[in-house]
Length: 304
Image 1 (tube, rainbow, N blue to C red):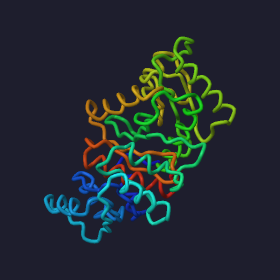
Image 2 (image 1 turned 60 degrees about the vertical axis):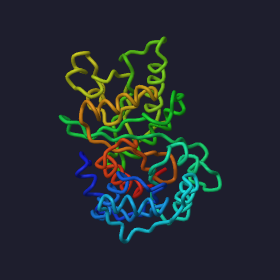
Image 3 (image 1 turned 180 degrees about the vertical axis):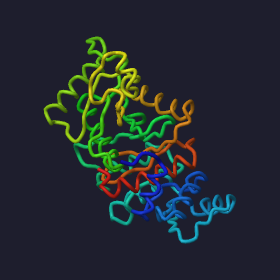
């Protein structure tokens, strides 16, 4: 099982390079991260965007883009469309967001003519976090896409997260359904959903994992906290995947780990036919490189 980002990058080097189509590539941090990934042999970038701006940013920051394919498209929506079409034609294995709003690139992905999204699937954001003091990576979902997921949507969120775990060589991830309390409370819908999802896992309706919940965060990740509360479950204190009840809790947890806990992180949109590398504009070059490397691992098993 892959346990840190050093290992993710190492495995990506062995499995790369993969072609990545970068929509609206005229962004300093995006180009810096791609340059690192290119030098490591992880990806071969195809840059779609304003060619003059791309070349200007590269020159100003001493970024060599020699050997990169550049497609000049000045309109941002059209740039996203062209990037998606490259993936559709199997000319790229991954899609990456550049200097463009998430909604614009996702509109290109969801375009029926491009056909990167199947009916019945669900796009969800999957974060991977390396947190000091833990011997494993944490997978967190959903902190960026689905505002208040229904029970059925949570099933798809879980399945997308399992695919990421599989790409990290974790064949049976332990999944904790995070709530505010450990017991089912009729006044707290998230706990009711958690109970139903556990039953679905026990019946084999959600397989390839072990699901536990409802769990508060402490007894999902701390064996001592779980023991102190008398919680005896295979997931208690040992969770690999944390499923949050809504976008607010997921987003706050994700960003608090990054800014308060100095966690290393990566972000991927799952549910399409290929992984979509999507990080915040404020994310570091390191986070973007981590996300590119993670995307390579996922592309080797299929993004959907």
